[in-house]
Image (cartoon, rainbow, N blue to C red; front, side, top):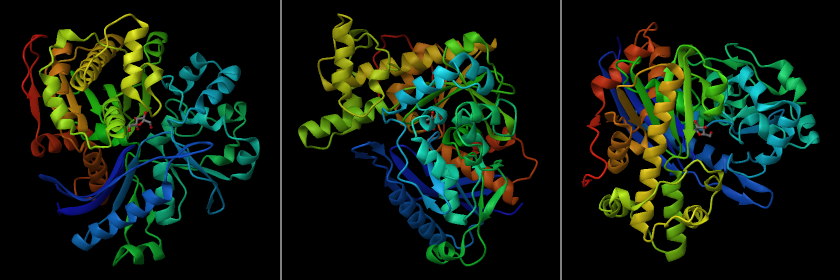
Length: 484
Ligand code: LFR
C-alpha cells in the first residue's frame, strides 16, 4: 500500500481545524495545520453562524496544508449536524442560524401539531432535540421555502463552495429527521406533510464517494497543482468520531464522544426504536458503513466553556481552565449534589453559573460557592449523566458494557475521565483527542486506496488502537482524593 496524505476539515461548534493526515496500512498520523475560533454572531433576529468567515478559514487551512504537502490526495469536510443554508441558484439566502437559537421552540410546536414525536421516532429514530432540522425548517417563512431551490447542511455547503456540486451526505442527512430509518432516500411523505418542498433535498451521497474536484478558481486560490477530489466522509462530526474510536471489542464497548456535546452510547448493526428507547432519549443516527449510532446527547463541555466565558466577561481577564480544574479536583466529591446537565435551561448561551445556582436554589439545595466548586459540580454532574447514559444504553439493548471509550477534547480532562470511570464503575479508555479528524482522514484514506478498499471499520479502528495514545482510568471509590 502507498503512504498517502489527505486534508481533513473539521468544524466544531466552538473551533475549527484543518489537519493533514498521513496514512498507510501501518501508519496513521495527524499534523494540525490551521486552527481557528468559531464565534457565532447574535443578530436581532437570532443567533447566526459566520459562515463565510468559517469558509475563509477553511480555504486558508487547505492552502497551508497544500503548501506543506503538495502531494495531498484528497479533502474531506465534517462539522456539527442539523444546521443548514437555503440556496437559490448559486446564492445563499441569508446566514445559517445556530442550533442554539431559541426560535426552534416554535418549530417544535408546529411539527408536533401535525405529527407527534412518537410517530416521528418510528419513522426517523431520532431522540427529541428541539433543534433537529425538521423543527428548524418549520420556523422558516413560507416565502423563504418558496424562494429556495435547495437546502444544504453545513459540510454540504462547504463542499458545494469547494466543488460546485450540491449533495447531502447521508450520515448528516440522518440528523435532519427527514430520512426514514433504513432507507437511502428522503422521506417524501413526511416532507409533504410538513409542507417542506421536496426539491429542497439534494441527492444523497455516501461516505467514501467522491463529491467532485476542487473548482478551478478555488484550486488556483489554494495552490492545488493537479485535480484534487473532495471525498465525502462521515460529514456529521460524531459519525467521523465514532469511526476512529478504538473499540477492539464492539460487543462490550460503549463510547462517549466528548466535545461541546457528550454523545453517549453504543454502535449497533440495527436501530432500536422501542417506546422505552424513545422515552430514555436515545437516537439512532446513521453511521458510516450503514452502522447505527445509538446514543443520547448530554450537554457536554459546553457547560464548562460557557461558564469560563461568563467569568471572563465578568472579570475582563482570561480564566485558566487548567488551574480551575486542578482546584476543582481538591473539592470533595460529596460536597456537591449533582444537577441535571440536560435541563433545557442550560442550552442557550449566557450566564451558565447563574443558571446552575438557580437550579440548586429552586430545589432548596446548597449551590456551589466558588469557581472551583462550580467546576467540580459540572464535572460530577457530567460524569453522572455519562454513567447513567451508558447504563441506559446497556439496558435498552441487553448488552454488557466492559469498557467505555472517551474520545474528543474531554479525553484530556483527567478529572472528568476519572469521575466517569468512578461513577460508571467501568474502566474508561481516554483518547484519541482528535477522533473526529482521524475518522475523516480514515474514510478518505480508504476511498483513495491508501488502505484496502474493503477494510471494515474494525480494521480501521485497529489502526487507531495501534497508533494513537490512549490512557486508562480504573474506577476508584467515590471519595478518593483525586490527582490531576
Ligand atoms: C456534536 C454534534 C452532535 C449534534 C450537535 C448539534 O458536535 O454534531 O452530534 O447533536 O452537535 O449539531
